[in-house]
Length: 520
Image (cartoon, rainbow, N blue to C red):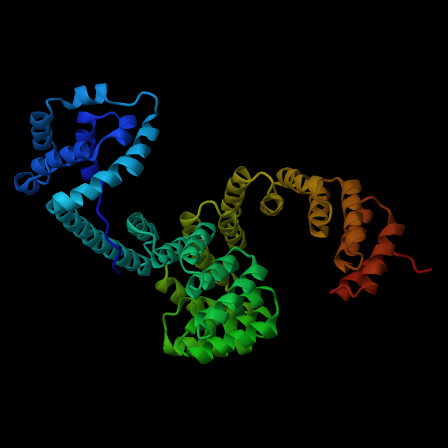
């Protein structure tokens, strides 16, 4: 793209300033005769000759020539002829607005070789800048395509330092969005729109960025505006469908996603999102059709591989889930969350060692995600390695002392090892902060029972039954505890309640009632 050329006045300004200061002070310029100005220009034309042109107007040669013509050094002229009543900025303004235009007009007339030189220099500079701009822009796009977003942003910075360009702003915004910096990306897209208010691609990208930060209503608004400008943007319709999907407006989501596939049948993200739209509604069998449709055409499509794996996990088809999570990891091994889900599928399939390895890998990639650490602990517990489970839960508690679930799970592992006092400490920590979980009351009651604190056990069983009053197992266990206290009346009431609530082992309940309870 060519730009309008203009003479760069910087070198000429230097030369003219030297000459002007040689003869007049700034306030006196207005009073100078035309002859005086002509004399100054003549000196300039004499000094800026072919010899100095060839040497790119070397400043030392110019100063020597002007000194010979004027009889004054630069230091002397600056001391003698600076207007002390003006600031430096004001002196510059006077020169730019009053002196330079007059002198330039004279120079154009009397020594056009100077102007020719500066025009050629301006053309060379413009050509060099354009080439540098295009080089930076193209390299930035190349980095963006390979997901080297930081390098891409640096190249777009270079391009934008040369000139303000809507495509460079748009590409830098896309790179920032790729790096997850959506707010900064929105700024760049808006800069592109400042240059061209009809630049639909930038507006659609703003909509996408707002979708990614969770501002779904604004995303829909911007995407609709962008699609009014460009009604053939399949990607725009895909993102609009996703925005409605996040709002759980499934009919609208489906319609726009279908529109995207009609405009571009190879936009596999749209086909994948149709499948995901079925997953969100619990229609897993329908979703599999769309994920497989994509994978038949692109076996390395990451989103469809991971979504299909998740769908099989939801359907409890664990072998298939593991198969597709592994394929997804082969395509992109940098996503810790996918590796964590692989571990969950392996855990559900009772492949405990493999699950532990997956959770360890995920946590090594993102040591700030405590779920990956507690999943390791849970897998060790499920394997029966309670010591390692306790160690990992303790690590999680150190990192997050408010994680009540880790206290609870560590308490379970301590209970399994027979460390009842430790278990009691952890379970009490949970109940001191949250008294809404019946299962925690149950386990603390069993812990107190094993420690011989039967009154405390009954108290906790009773608290559990207030939260969940139809649990036959807890009625039976409370009855056992009453027996320890020789409270046959309450024990029998609880045994009968357990029987009425269809306790699983009716034979056992009947024997306990027969042994301990006298029929009225």
